Image 1 (cartoon, rainbow, N blue to C red):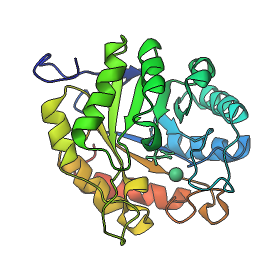
Image 2: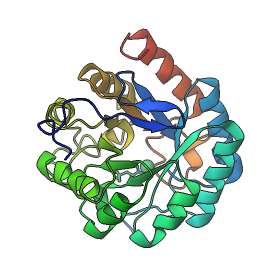
Image 3: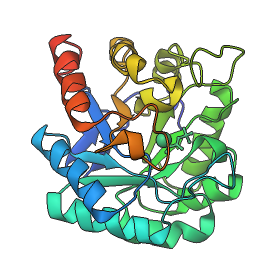
Image 4: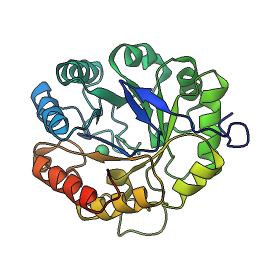
Length: 263
Ligand code: PEP
Ligand code: MN
């Protein structure tokens, strides 16, 4: 169903008036984790000022260590909804179990399935039964074919509103947190009709690489870039090393615009 062979026209995922996959590039930004109303509110105001309409924020955090901050859960979703209504932003967040699907439907505009759950087939099937768009991230060690099959799981249950996201894969390279598989973007664009985003934050794990990888993503045809922004990354409860603060994010957008790749 997601194959280009089945459908020639691009799928456009509409979220609060924003059309992802319509040929224009979109930026999705926001903190790694929702920590408080004030924190999300500050980021939302900065996004609004830059004309960005899609905000991310993690509430159910799939952390590698059980001792790391696990997210605020439903309270985090509630904060996201409150802030998104205040600023008229669309909001994207991850759930990690089908049991939270109803909560996600109540609070979110786009439901994210994270890398660690790309092959959580019960979650994929539940995502296929909702009428909310799904942002599906590539698994840590998943092939492109496996990512496409995961999208097929969602679509086969009836939900065709799917956005794919390349977020880096595990290789032997240690200079970056993951290895951004940039060629996955044109391959996914050729083989499927779905919008494709690149998450520059989790693929690199390095603040100094966010701008060059965002440029690369847009140059190879990504429909948008996802990145993390926090009012004060030094005290962030997760991903402190790679989130931008607000002035850094504004500079990132200015430079991306100057490059001519982001209009
Ligand atoms: C995230 O986007 O918050 C996240 C945890 O990313 P990933 O699933 O790609 O690791
Ligand atoms: Mn993060």
